[in-house]
Amino acid sequence: MTQPAILVTRAIFPHVLEQLKEHFTVESNQEDVIWSPVELAQRLQGKAGAFMTGTERVNAELLAQCPGLKLCANMTVGYNNFDLPAMTAAGVLGTNAPDVLTETTADFGFALLMATARRVTESEHFLRAGKWTRWSYDMFAGAEVHGSTLGILGMGRIGQAIARRAALGFGMPVIYHNRSRLDAGMEASINARYVSKEELLQTADHLMLVLPYSASSHHTIGAAELALMKPTATLINLARGGIVDDAALAEALRERRIAAAGLDVFEGEPTVNPALLTVANVVLTPHIASATVGTRKAMAALAVDNLIGYLVHGKPVTPLNPEVLAPAES
Ligand code: DGY
Image (cartoon, rainbow, N blue to C red; front, side):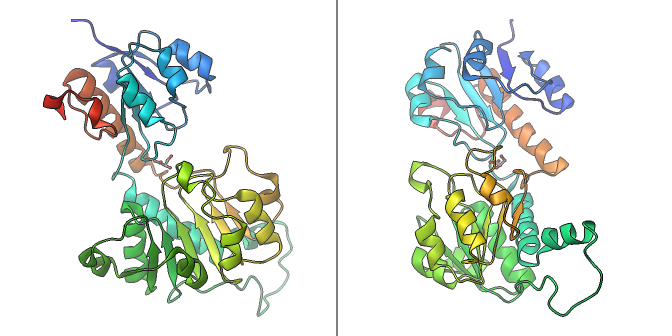
């Protein structure tokens, strides 16, 4: 029997390619070339599936050019690269990689919070520049983390894992806002109190953003929201670029209207708003919240399981638009 053909759109662990080759005819991109939409459409010709990394746009225009495509499997939990209604209309399944990165991403939330509140990178730059000549009482004095109030905007799996760390490890009261409120048992188990978005902004000493990006979450944090925050507050964006208005944030940071920010994601990344690069009170990392070797392997493994599950056995593991599956398969 001929194996289905698939495209692996970006470089990936070699063992992942080997595993895929046991089931599929594989075209890969270990040179990690960033393909234009035209080239992506060309490479997808004759392919039943694609292993994707969350950076490739799958929209109606692309789908119209790829009639044989059945599955786009992201190795990321985020799937804002997918136009899901267009995929459903074209009968193309989308899958993502939830759960496997939750704890690692929550760890990184704290890494970024600690680095931001305690001014770790700012003080390291100072040291490396040879400016450290003596100890002084207020040198890089930052904000307290333990015991301070953590606000979480977006309370999915990652938000809940952050809340548990905050309460158990750092003795932080946790408040949150989310589209839907958790049930009372879950709130009690993670020790988090539901508040309005306004109260969250006004009360949090540290605000962590972990909500998914969509047209409705675009610029959830802009000038008006930043103006509600405490001047001593820190803002951490672990979620997606576009949730924060980066230009408004750079201005708020420069004017010290909030104390500091830690950003792992950016509007238009990998390009970073140049204004953010010129302010000292911001910690910037290149979208690495899930980047441990073990977690990246687990994320890739779940995308592989989805490809094999759907294209070989008709049963995907984590379908995003199960309505495209035949009734017996959903
Ligand atoms: C995800 O899985 O969505 C992370 O942001 C990595 O891209």
